[in-house]
Image (cartoon, rainbow, N blue to C red; front, side):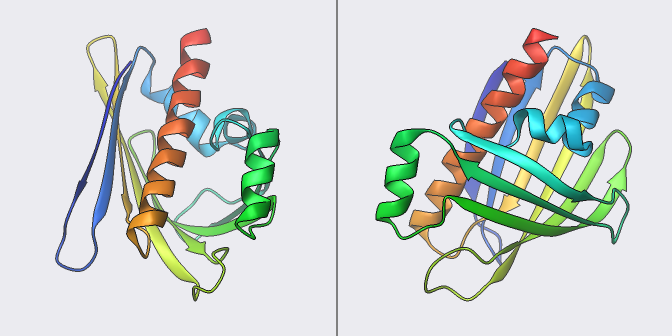
Length: 168
């Protein structure tokens, strides 16, 4: 797996871009992004578990999942920041083009003292010779600190995805 992360500015809102290459099929990567079983297996940074409560995979369809801190250092850090150990994410799929493009928005409503706002994301899966290139582009958060946290979380999640695909 090769990976890199870069942040680039756009007129309306900065974007964060993540790129990975996997020795897997587009179908395998797609299923890990779009099924309850797949997401629960890898989604979330190391030290968190994810439970999917709702997943309606169609444009306009909604999803909901709970992400819970399970590692002691994360539990202590979240308590110190006044964050709940479990956060529930809700979102809406805006594009579903099997097995190549998945776009969605989530509501960032878990940050103390910050009004809820939407974060858009796009997952693009492109077949390469014996594998796939996956590019995830998402909106930056409301400030630099939370954008850094979001970037670290996504990188950790994508590292978990890579481990799952490598083990197959």
